[in-house]
Image (cartoon, rainbow, N blue to C red; front, side, top):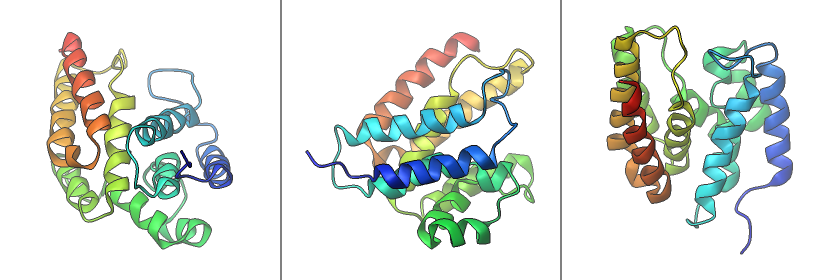
Length: 180
């Protein structure tokens, strides 16, 4: 079976993300933040093993870069210059609009993601799969419940993009109940 994604483009996006997130850590840990985006890309790549007909390079690049606009000094224009408009548009859709009230940010992002190719939907599914680990010790019960409810919202909105990622997210949602 031929791979749907480019190793060279993976490495290029990985290096860009690692540099952009340099000094950041995964919340509640000492792990470098690039560990998170690597796990997200792994989830997407695993989906390609059982699902074909996707633009794997677009999905993998967006998986690795999905937080650079939201959490670093990288701008949409800078990302567009480095990776092209399709990748920049995907990453922008995956980024929360911090100008909106926090209660509206997820719904807004999901609406923008749904206007993108399904490879971008897959990235958001993979992102929440990766994030449904034990919550940081400093999260309140309310925050944990909200995060779980958002996971259900993501599943409901984006599950059509990938049966394997949707199944995996649903399993993680069920296991996350242990923290509620």
